Image 1 (tube, helix red, strand yellow):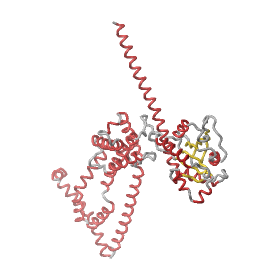
Image 2: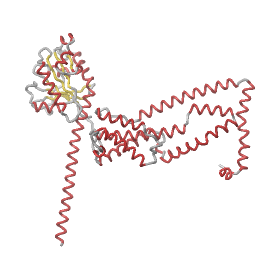
Image 3: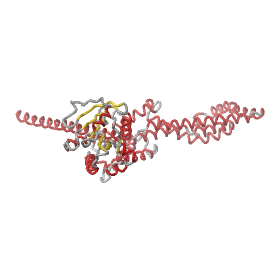
Length: 474
């Protein structure tokens, strides 16, 4: 400080102080004038009212800013399995604990270590029995995680943070240093301001209490948000990869553009035809190109569910088991139709158990909803025996639908099916998603294997040709 005064010059400093004294006396003179005229109390009330309004405005802005940041954060995918959702809980806990003082944005090694910790948590959750779960990840997949996370984080920063396209890491570090320097000399400044101008000091202290530490809020909050989003992005794509939801091409697979496939099964005389007539309202016809000997495909456009494919099958005993199993593996919703008055409970319970076993072998995919549609169930529904039938069939009560199809085109019958579809549509969409995911994975594996084999064969051929050419020259 003495060196700074010496360089500035004592006389220049004295001249500056003499210039500032008349200006500093003005607020004090104003307070004396307010006190002499009796307006000091009104001024204090005005100060309190304005300060209160400013406080409410600051609180609203802080809450709105927090909500906007929360909306911009990365969220888990709705198609994830329960295992993936458990891994996300650990990623979120690590993101909440990220501290800019421990992982500075200017320290590349600290950021790499934070990303490695995120990968380790996700890997440990998916492979708890492995001593080194990170080794289960291939090098191309590791690079893919960092690439996708960095790209999406860049997009979020550009579209969320004001002036982020002009803000450098050096600006953030410099703002942090200025905040630390200002905090060291701020108490001295407050004491001097109170001695020179008590009225101004009173207003500034109140404003400081209302507004908070602006520098600390802006810089620290921004850096914390960046760190948390970095952890979430790395964790998100690590979960996508370990759960088998991310292809090496970088494309997140989905089943959009493909209709939900509804498989209709049941014994002879159960009412499958009436059920299809209710679903299609008698308008859909079989598609001869998509149909085969055993399954008739009906295409349906629904306002609620989009495009649907209804797969009509012959009587269950006539349908070959191999063809039935293949249809079950490709279905997104399975409707087992049963005549409530003529149902062989033991037989149909055994067939439903078989379908459940087949669904359990779908290579870890989420199971499609298996629904039981009871036709001719007017008496059954009136007597309240639906739960008893569900128990006899070993099915959840919410998966058993009591239908009255005396008039298949009646609005009541269609509403009953729509209610059941609405309750299980999310599960059907998840099954649809994972089915097309596994199909895309198999296709990618075949393409990569073929490309790699062609590359190896080409390199071997060039090496052999080079050897023979070298020998002929000799």
